[in-house]
Image (cartoon, rainbow, N blue to C red):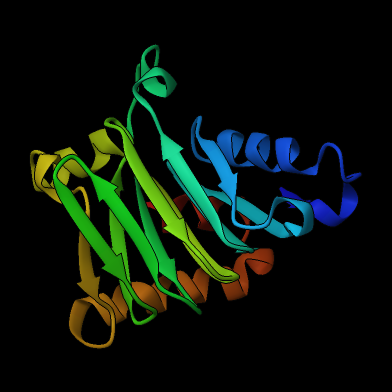
Length: 181
């Protein structure tokens, strides 16, 4: 899927951006640093059970409220990799800031605020909580955690995400499914 606010008229672009994000990840509320001049692009792909996306977007606050997930049956974690500017995240009693060279884990089953004040490029993985739980146990401890991606397994992980994005158009459906596992 590809979405750009350049394709929208001014009156609807902010609502359409919020809808595109909600369809890609899950329901969210959005507030824009500069609503009149807001601009964003979003590309997303399926990797089996995982969702993978890339966005380039002006300063925005995303808010996940209790009402957004009241009727959801399945929860997900988002793993956000900021590429050009810091991101900020608050969930429960935890506050996190993540700079390029790191990544952030967000729980989708409890309220949160996520924001960046400047134009940013982000890579995001949407991972079913059940998949993480089956491999690592309870996910309660993962919300609002940041990880170093400049060395070790964090660098390997971000390299795999980069490789997937750079080659996504040449990967067939079976390979995408396997990559998601």
